[in-house]
Length: 382
Image 1 (cartoon, rainbow, N blue to C red):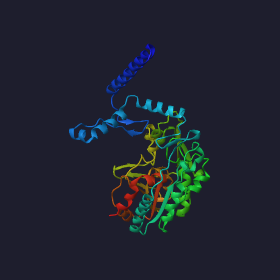
Image 2: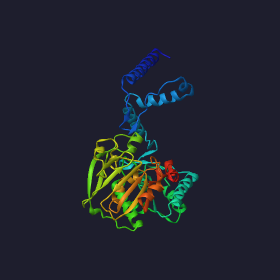
Image 3: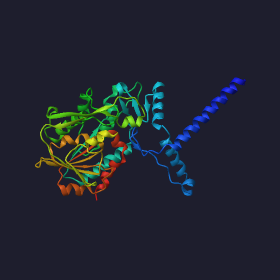
Image 4: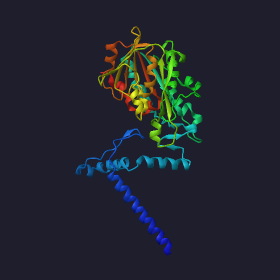
């Protein structure tokens, strides 16, 4: 090794040590963050130390997570990594495809046969316990199926529809399966999904609402019956946060507001709060602007409408339902919204006490299979 090679290695070693030292100093000097706006999640806090947690390895594991989350300029490094991935031609990160025309598209994770049967069995247990309740199941295919043309070249082809069909075939005959795929596919050139978020847009929810009305035997409102209000052009959604891809164009969020004068009372039961609006406008100033719909997810919401002679509806759901439920307020006197992730009361008592006639189970297909809380519906029968 000649003198110049030794000098080069020596200089690089010094630069490396200076870089590590600088980053360590910044880590200790920079105050910890509680929440990451760009990733839309709570960050790890410094774990409590004890001899027991050290010996068990729990402290070391939690400390590694803490350092990773609180690393100085974390958001900058995430952006640099995603930029390098794009330069290297990588089209997927954290289960999110970097698609064409600025679309971020979440992968579909197929369930095992046992997982599928367990979910359907939970629905059947609930069905057996509530024989007088008219039930509708809407499992929504996602952008990975409806926007296949936006996927990057050579991306694995999703088979969501095959699993939708399996669920349909296994369900009891008295449970109506609401197939929204044909209606959404017919409108796939419209903006029915956000580009940076896993949810459908309000327009996508509107087309599904029309299909649900057909199954329920009610007349849906025409699109011309609504004032369509674009409330923001600065929405960066869940896939933007999850993927780490930056320099994406933000989405817009639209609300479909009835042209007729409508009055509502929205009760967030566990929080003991009420509102006269279906929308929480202050959330437009936050990172997760999708929380404009019902201020996010809650264990139980009761919506009382001005249609006092209408029937009553129970909605068991994930967050996909949040942008569809406002359309249903045109047709029901009361709507009870239950999120099994947070609700632990007896659903049958809720149905009986309020004389609820109809029930809608609404999930996107990915969440339906991934989220174990759907099985809780069979455990909410006391």
